[in-house]
Image (cartoon, rainbow, N blue to C red; front, side, top):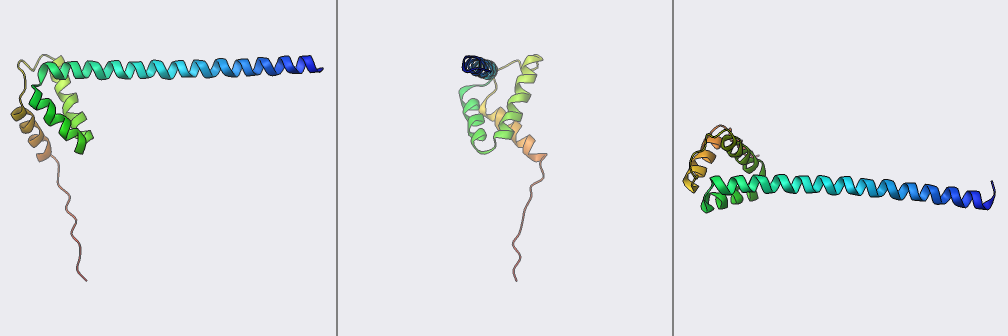
Length: 115
């Protein structure tokens, strides 16, 4: 192989690598757009079914227990999509739902032994 052929092969590989990288970046960006669209859709539904205090309560729960907040949001969104929520939920409604969910959890208590 002479220098021109080697240089051309190197350029071709570099171009293919750049094209793959660009395609991967576009896939990642598209996925991020989908995630943001889904997040916006969820927030829109929650704004429709929760009053401001209830949304604030759920945001506070998210700070401490993100898994619980996700669970509550998923349940609320599912109920709303099924048409089973026919009014705006209040902070008291969310507190009641959280209490019912926490009743189902068994609290783990670890005691320190004295020697």
